[in-house]
Image (cartoon, rainbow, N blue to C red):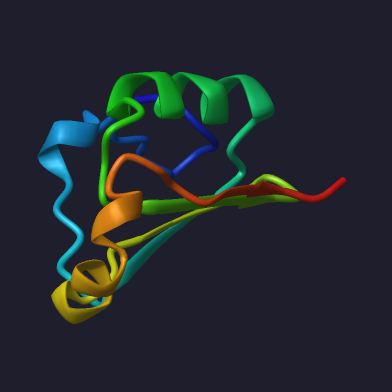
Length: 83
């Protein structure tokens, strides 16, 4: 067991996490290096929108009807970082 006393740390692989359309996942205490590793693992061709600000990672899955309107941008993703 890692972490402080009484705290259990669990490691998940990104492929184990599903974010349903219209929903989002927020994860705190993510370092910049971890953020870059996550971006590398999920790849460039994805529907998810990924944001990072002050060690908080947010992954959003747009609703399908929003994706239809942006079919020409299918290979792009919004990645934001504010220092």
